[in-house]
Image 1 (cartoon, rainbow, N blue to C red):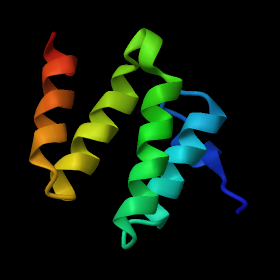
Image 2: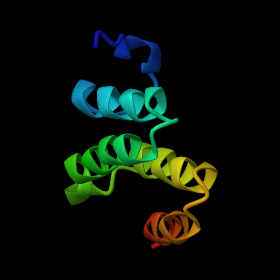
Image 3: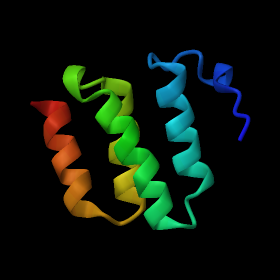
Length: 79
């Protein structure tokens, strides 16, 4: 899939992570596949707790009604 990650120029993350986040949104209707992409994006940025990615993950989990992971991500953000 060809994804133009330049549309997220303000988003301070690697092109690979941006692509994973875009894929998570494009596969939104397939929660298992979508979650796989989100988890990969989080794994790529786990060492530095990348704030942009964490906020994107929080919003993703919240709107997927996965409140347990949304809360866990929110706690990571405010820690």
